[in-house]
Length: 217
Image (cartoon, rainbow, N blue to C red; front, side, top):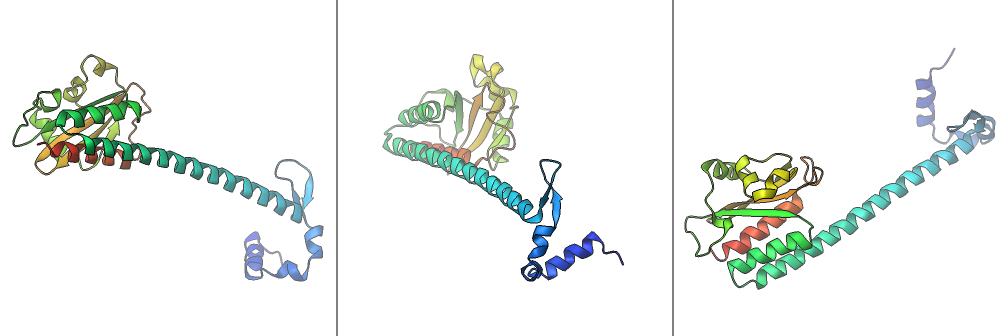
């Protein structure tokens, strides 16, 4: 009777202590070397497998440490931005602090905001320029930031002469009480804001901007 590979595998799964009672078999069994043609003992093959697993775990650990360091750095930048927005005494100061932080701390080359409320603030600036009904409807249906290579032509126009050169965008809604608006970040790098990227920090940025601006609206 010939046993199938499945039956042999099932036997060892059901009898994990088999080789404890038959240690001499470990040195007698040979298997192909995974990186060469020569045969090696089963014990040596297990050592190679453990080394490969250890290397994979080390790479994963390094990735986790790198992600943790990056997250800590972003968290620190958000903390400093929050402090700056809290210190701002005017709406103009809020906007200036926000744009400065995006440029210097987050290395976002281009950023614009449009804000609309049921009571216009006494301030002049592009942020309170009129927007179309289409943009307002877009923001109403935007529950989280949206990233990718395309934005409405009206939004691209907010960037003026450099708008035509932008290849990736992040649009985040601004919603705080009676305040509504849209924050848009842009980059000439097509890989900077891509559809599959995480949007948690973008959400926090837009929440900070909306809350800070709402203090003066």
